Length: 331
Image (cartoon, rainbow, N blue to C red; front, side, top):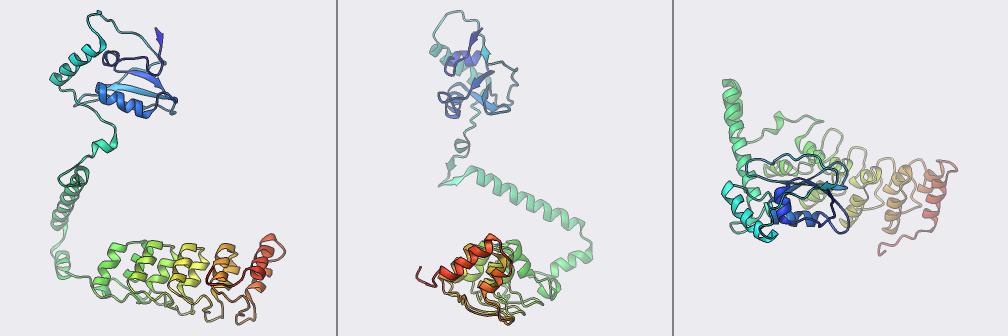
């Protein structure tokens, strides 16, 4: 029984012994295994911790199970009648006759492009999806009662008044859920992108509260008002600051929102940033023109709010920021 070194085997030996344990190290890695697999009609899998690999022979119908090995490999009986390369050629012919095929575990090669760049995998998935949808439609049409089928047939387009309330609006639900596809379908039926719920919140408000950056960007491109106010006078920028959505804050500023806009209580986004104690967002607001001296209806400046938290380090840190960072929209 000879100890196995990373490259101490031939194609002939692997063909006779389709199962052996190989150590992973700098000389032998996954690329080596893939190369061997292609050359010798072999596959491989991982065992437990990534310290060993298992080689096994693959058949077009099944993958043969392999016995456990202990890191050693015994030379097979060899009649000495030929070199490894001669045996490999004979073995290739034998495998072809017996129906052995390459079990390529290289994912990229498994999905080669054909037919003007179309991917086989995508085509198969599309066919499977279409077949599944057709099966579901057929099944449900059989399960529906005549009255239920009549409701379905009567609603070729969505009837929003039947699926909406003052609180629950489909456009807002899709915005908060990140369902851009369904949201766009409603907009195609001329649903107002600025439609508000009972609290005066628009779809952009909801998407901002939910930190749905892709939806926020999409709604802004669709013409949503970045400075829309809810019943409390709060804008999407107020909510972006509250939930700590830094990228949304930057995006809204790019749409030239007023960084000093105040709600019904006189709170600006900078006031909100002091309440949430978010230094990074406060700095963004300051360098983009936020007024640190603006008072709310209670006569409190942003610095007053920060100091009201007491003598912890964050209070001093935010105070330093408010005292020293200049307001400069060019920074």
